[in-house]
Image: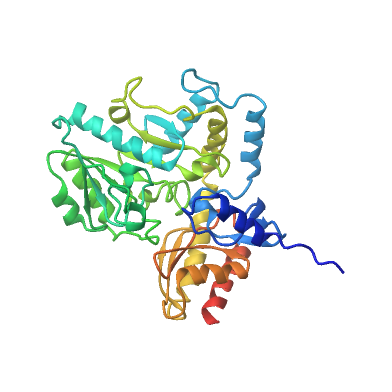
Length: 404
């Protein structure tokens, strides 16, 4: 009997040979996927509990999103913003309404959305607030992750993301996340914005203390400073509400969106704000050839319509409660702490047992995909289409590796 060839090792070697080593992926080579499951080149199935860092909130190949993409591919894919197209207005209107804002500016990647937010906040500071030219500053938080452009890594506190990429962009003040007094003290007459993640994902799904976000909102209003909420990972249903800010009834001046907005099919991001903020931009001052392209708009419009039903937010809230209850039961049995909201959790594994990388590798051998961050911490962020049974299976595999 001839054994079937195992393709994964060679595929991993080829990727390492021809690719810059800017990632350290698990040795899984995915070839197909559907819903919450992926299948590798050797036919092995895995439960995806990372969901593309929330880019796959609606699962792999959601039928409505794939249908929208197929239909648009047969009609029109790109015009650039030199012209308009027949999908653009619907997308912008429906996303604006979902956000409760007057305007949106579509871009492509999350980092582009953050860069756009920074530029708009500075321009607003000069044109509306009256900050002296070249003096604007923005307050940010330690442990932040907003992207990897040169400007964004300039205010990162992660040395892996920041080291050797200087000289760095000035104009940022970094304070401890969750410390309202420190944030308030950092604001001066030249501060144009506070830029925060309502939950810090890359840092290990860090939820700020109760009252922190409302306090930030109050201070920003009192000091005439814009509040920019980076909801690229936390938004669009991930935490059980449309936006994570809603858990504390906070409405920012600007939402920065991405990842799930593209439905796991195309990169789509956007900035949403009222006209008094986004209206500072005039033609020629900011743009993107692919931003808001017809294919992206077609898919993202369907994403917005899925969210408008409230179904996915409810699923995340209900399944998230189940997930966190089961994870809390493992604290003291290999887990030191569990954090998060909805279908999003950061798990601190006892470092005496294993590192986060080792935990991810052991879960992989049991058919569950997760990702480590910062030593012995791993993150779980399954697609919102995951079932109770699949969720229970993932936690059971985690319990098994902790008991090994």
